[in-house]
Structure formats: structure tokens, C-alpha cells
Length: 241
Image (cartoon, rainbow, N blue to C red; front, side):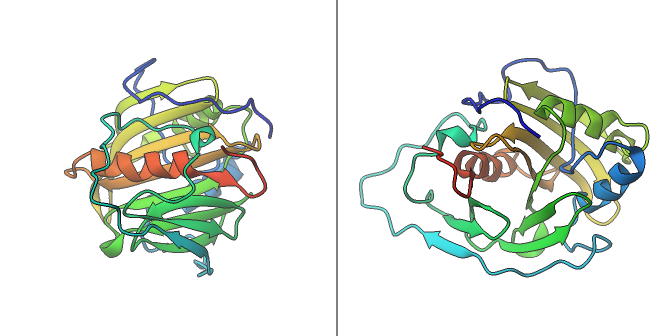
């Protein structure tokens, strides 16, 4: 699917706040296919029921120790778009992976990769040690990020608003991105907080990146890996500077 060129993304405190939420998954036209793909994109650190998770080697770039001069800490924890990628090296505490699915992305040191096959595209997971936090990355098939998120939440056949303990927190959107934040109760992990961010990458393809963690975790620790992943995301062969 083709959507407009990405633009810089403001923090989720801007724009409409109409309590819209989302899990990361590919919303497939047709409830049957969508339901199957939804299962693969649930908050699942072990991959149980999502098919065989495939271990794949990735090329990694790490950052050397920083000089004594302190690096200013950004005060805005909002999620930028992939079009803002300009750094030749990953942020401190992160590693840059050249993922075999077809993009580069910065993920925290120590987080491990696995992959499951969805109905229409692979789903890549990066799990924190112990599995408390997670990133999910996959392509989406709708015409716009906002359409994708709306279907993901509200579809009568597979919308995740049906999840136990579902609580919409906030949503935001721009011309080339949309974001949903919510909580729900996972049967294995307890109450979780989720940020589902969908955007147009530099090559025009739409992707979803979801970050999740325990509900009692400082929200910035869920936001930060997501913001870094979106900012650094670059499809193979695209110009992202």
C-alpha cells in the first residue's frame, strides 16, 4: 500500500485525544484473516501460539563510550518519524540492527530478536531480558496509519477493544502517522501498558511499531524504546537522512 511521504512527528500530547487504542498487528481486510493476524501481534513475549519463532542473525552496530562532555538529555519524549534519522551511529544504550526482513532499526542493548510469520508479513519481536518489555515491528496494509489503527481497535470480529480490562488512554495523529495508547489485562502477564505507533516509512511503506510493558512501569520506559525505534527506522535502500 502507498501513503504520503513521512513528516516529523510531534509528541502524543498534541492533536486529538479521542481515546483510541491499538495493539500492533496487521489489520487484514476481512474479519477471518484479521483475527488470525491479530493473534500473532498480541503482547506475547514467548511467541506461544504464534507459530514457530525463527531465530535470525542480524548485523549490529554499537556505540563506543562517550567522551566526558555530557550529552544533553531531550525533554520531549514524543515519537519522531523515520524521516528524522540522521545519526551515523545508534544512541547510547542502543544497537543498530540490519534486520533481514528489510530495514535498519535501533533497539536496546540486550534485547533479543525473534520472528513469527503473520498472514501477510513477518512480525519481528525484540524482547527485553526477562520479557517485561517488548517491541513489535510489522507492515500494515491499509491506506493510512489512522485507518489501520481504527480498524485494529474497533473491528467487530477482531478489534482489541474486546480485550479484558481494556482502557483507552489517548491517541494522536498526523498526516503520515497515528498512535494509540491503552491498557489491558493479559492472562499471563497481568495488566499491561501499550503504545501502538503506525507511520509511513521513507520508502512509502506503512509500518507499525508497538512498545509494551507492565502497567506500573514508568511510562517513559515504554515510550523511549519506541521513540528510538521510529526515529532510527529506515527501510533497506531508502534515503532516511
